[in-house]
Image 1 (spheres, one colour):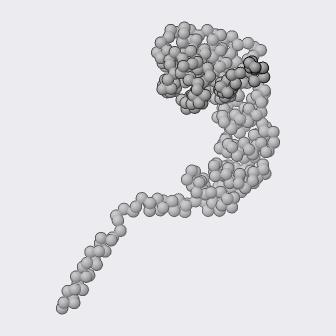
Image 2: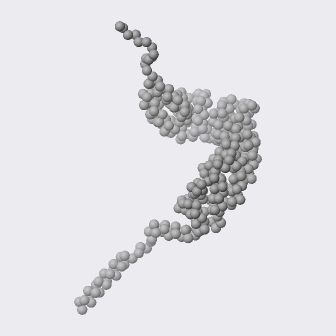
Length: 385
């Protein structure tokens, strides 16, 4: 009788323990994630995955970045890889291109070959072309408006824009080539007319335009109305045609990308900080067009960075071009000058200003003065015998 009671007691404890160990109502997050991933993998096009593996492509990268490509029914892995190899890409380059731009495998080989011929219009050879594709695969495999792209390339060549510049625009400003060619032609006419209207010469307009397009091609994405509005606003602010021409030359056309409201905000900020009249502010802007170009938050950040280094408002007003430098560049240059015992807050900001090359040249001159001997080593010594 006793052993039956003991057996019953153990059985109850075992049932109780099993209830405590029963699986949770909800699966852990990781389990759900694994299940979701497995489910997605089961929908992938296995032929696509196998072919990508064949070319040593890291499938995990594609799943993480653009997994939808692996779900496509129709892909052209081998065909696209062959085209790249024909251009001179080795196995590593092919894998890298397909990992970074997996949508390439859903582009038809016919369209890719058309794109290849298009880009070859501005590339010296296939070696140059494959280097561009390796650097900018997304731009190359954006297969659309190909006839329009070709017309735009021909238009820019007719303008005598160098092929090396056009190839750079294809990779960094590809939207310009998706514009209807007539729109780009219209924008070029507006830019030329604007330059001439503010006093630019017929002899210089072509050089100015080519330089503008090579430095700031995004200007072609603007509207003619926006350009006209900006010029009219500057005239209302008291800038003469000659002064606007100066701004156009210094700002490389970025002036056309500003709206009147942002210009007004920047002017008001600068006028308040420097405590100057409209005339004085205009002179500051002509010295440093960045006062118009940079937004108020950027100007404020740069101004505060200079003040933290002990530089005064008066010094900044004397050399406003220093506002073209980021706070990080300012700190680096001040530390370098301090290492030579040069105290920027006690002197002129000219040695802090300028491009990297100009600063290094100034720094070298200051350094040379510091180590130069105080006497002429070839001069005879006056020694009493």
